Image 1 (cartoon, one colour):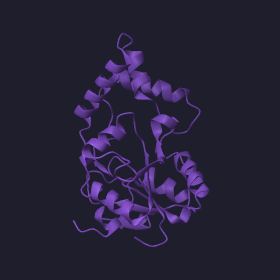
Image 2 (image 1 turned 180 degrees about the horizontal axis):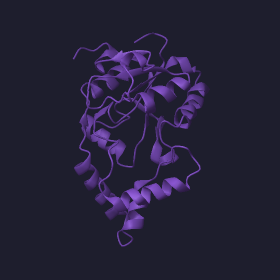
Image 3 (image 1 turned 45 degrees about the vertical axis):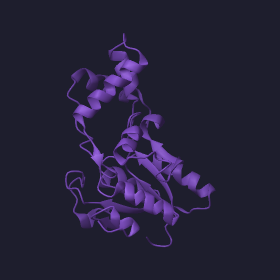
Image 4 (image 1 turned 30 degrees about the vertical axis):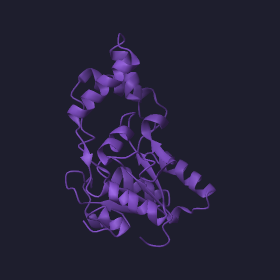
Length: 223
């Protein structure tokens, strides 16, 4: 890791987790309810708290029953597992000194699933809760630059300049573009072809400062 990097921020789906996230949900009622909620948002890239959507569709269920239903359907439609090297890389970076955070299009279950797959809590892996931005909490989703800009402000209060921050993601549109626009250094993870999202660009056109074939490269670890 270059000595000028003092913070490393990660995407989750497709970066720390092997995932098929981003597909269309098969339930047309759910799609319509989400679309209606998006239409009411003032933001260009709106996000919902999926629990509220399910609550409107299943008013007879308790909040606990809704969370259980959502999680069961999520695990069935989008099974996830650790991206090779994720836990080791986070631990290695944390030991080396950079602050660690997350910026993810996520729901209430995302962080718990990440912890389950990586076998440790985020804090145990060195992730700073103050450096995490999840779309369902902000009601704004990547590529909205707001998620990155709000973290840039927090990091600035700690004396970290934007160009001392590295953002690692798998999607050039949702990860690389907004992170770069925010002034962060960027790394595009290409090791899992099923997770890579180039949106018609070549790797040369990705805009990333660095191309990673493996997360291990971040901490100088060997797969």
